[in-house]
Image 1 (cartoon, rainbow over the protein chains, first blue to last red):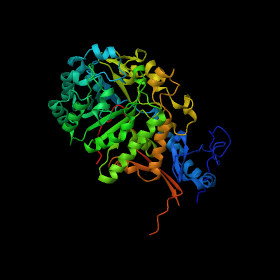
Image 2: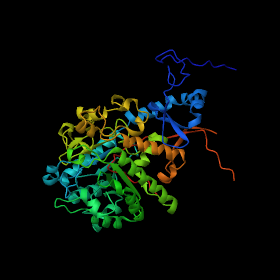
Image 3: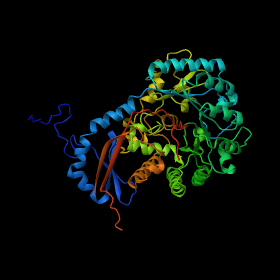
Image 4: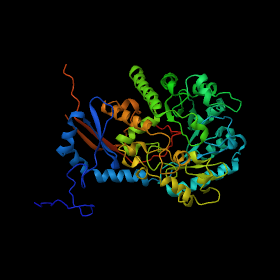
Length: 473
Length: 34
């Protein structure tokens, strides 16, 4: 019988066997209060490793060695998983703005007013040319069988409807298409075209009544979008691929719970409840306080759970589902604003109607971040340009207090555009912090109470493997 | 009936190939809720 001697790790920074938590080469386990009556979380931040431990057992679990040994056996694998997620992905989506114009003048829009009022459309010829360039690029960079994604985004893409529909018609086999629209131009004909081409459709609505919703989402004459969104929701009922985005502001946050009822009653498959982005000054007039916004948002999540228990039908809040996934299955996350570096410039980029490229739509109004032109420059070189590297190089390890925050990989310190424009630089935080803290604490409570399935979708773990399991009574 | 006691430690993790592409303005709906 061959006796294997324990391998001495020679590349460690110090001659420590890592037997003890928080000293030498031992793991950094940070206990955090999650506001649960029984459990606290113990987190190893770099690997996004977590466990929930009963309050009275914290000292035993940390000192007994079981958790340390179990983690030690997996830490390399988890490090590699996080490295690939954070630094190893290839861009596969484009936020494609087919027009600068919008028929709306929403208070918090990140596209400058001048562009939205008098901007230009991309011609149909140029739009088709752009899709051909992108098809060739992704054909070289993505693995066989991977479908790149094109999201027609705003301003209002349906103002340039003929060109957009021509692109979907011509390249339907080459891309997964989606469109984000204010719904004012989403008539029967448009719905028929988009649904028959299996295009994902995102609407925007901030409140369950016109009185509140129309305060922030209105046209240049001050008339709101509420009735249009309501009509579009009726047209889309029964279609699988649609969602509604709500932007949480000072104006609507008190009505989020009622909005959940409103969405659930109308069988919205999925919604997003995104906290306001404060990139441009006009949006900051609507900024809610962290504490109040978190209180109302978490109450809305509670309501989705109650409705699920009562009816057996979920209303998934996509951005919160993403936080749960970030904790229990980090690589399964689908949105990339809550990871650092964010997805801007490394998972996706944004294309303006004149072909200019930006790391994300959030930067389209900021000329400093214009990195090249799709019709003139090689895409791979644009990806490596200084404006893109400014965004892809922003990481939580360089930001205070994120660099020492236990939940840094469940929050991601969004958003670089906010940090740069509002708070003075890429190594600053964005507009909110405590809101994200409360969201993660709530997610851990959901996990502690075994309620995860109520907040995700059916078969959410299909195709996943268990990479860690530990539980003792 | 005896109430089932909760575990002292809960820890689990699942893995898959990372494909994250979305940003907060939009989510592609290839998963449906019931």
